[in-house]
Length: 194
Length: 301
Image 1 (cartoon, rainbow over the protein chains, first blue to last red):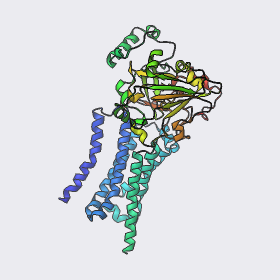
Image 2: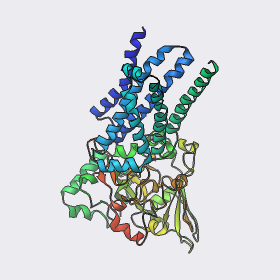
Image 3: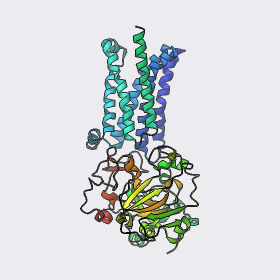
């Protein structure tokens, strides 16, 4: 039974991609199609960040180790959707016109932090294989704590690009903060129990 | 002049056909039908001046009183009551007045005014509004010598306006203009679009439209027009003075901290359509640049 879970999670994770592909193909993106794709891929990146961060707390809550086995795949989907998001912005919105893109990255803090988050995802994606885990040993764990920073960056990216923090940007911030706070607790317990 | 009745509603298709017919019989005949106000932005190609579809204009709105997402206003405003409606013109005037919406539609003749709308978020539309110059309405009162600015106040009704139940903005929505800006013939009181009554999600029953300023300057569902001495603080200035200035003229050279103002996306174009260059004063520089002679527009953004 459990062996079907992983392919199942993989399939579910591709649904947003298939959905946006369908919308592009059948021209169902509404009045501002480029923004629609940008926002869609951006929001799904945040959702996958939250899902990835939920696995460890879920393991503790349910006492099932199974959750952790989805973590890498979900993390790679974060990278996948983040890359689609970036490509939409660079390729479709600005059509690889680099000057305004460079201006944006350095002049607009929300773009800077969003871009930084994507750059930080690269080493995580590269070192996600079993081999790399063995190779990096303890450093692997340290390196992959970057996801906490990426999550905060992603949330700030959303807050800063929105006119007001209400409501969605706030919701994602709260979810991410809760997921991070749960980890502080876990760590304390580890200490207590030696 | 003939007053346009709302019963004479023209379907969008017929409307567009008629327009292309006018175009086809030649520019002179077409422009003869228009008044001296420069409706169309001549600095752009015809393609870029193509009217935005009725559907896009009425389903893609920023109207936070009805919700913060673009589709919210259409969804949440359909039950909004716009009758009876009274507008009060007050403040630094000799005799404040109150006008009902019926009085306004009877007194002032709405004409078609095709203006470009540039949103501060970096998108634009071309909208065939129905309306008349605000100066006509303001001439109904005699301002005192203290009157320097106009403050617009939108309706406050959290019962009907979902968005106002939350502190998204400092409700009621407020906007303002300098008197000379308010008296400029391009500054329009809007009562309709596409020859139809103004839909609720576009600011019914009555809104302002200043085509050379970012869209948020054009307050919707107005209940109060106040002559004031000091520069009013608009709701957006209140929310973030660094981002939203009082003037908020469309200016490709002044960057908003979040959105590039150098270019814009034209609503209704497909995903492969490039951005177009944003024009100073949204292309209405010939008409309005003289209002700002000698002013540092980077400072007074």
